[in-house]
Image (cartoon, rainbow, N blue to C red):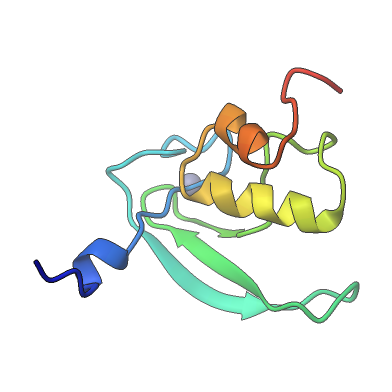
Length: 103
Ligand SMILES: [Zn+2]
């Protein structure tokens, strides 16, 4: 068996993480990378995405259902990114050892 990664099996689907978008978490959507930006707070480069069917841009750190329940900004960032890969809030909370039901 050859386990060499190919483009097919290393590419993860991205999802629109904006709540209220009709194509939020839709499989039938095209998310494309749309440039990067940095904030004044730190020099970390953040990815912008474009939601094809919803026709809006969003930041990889723009949305997280766990906002307010995160610890550090770093964790918030991780939550947002995981959410872009369509992990559920509970799954993300589990990975980061958070309790999504608790404030
Ligand atoms: Zn969208």
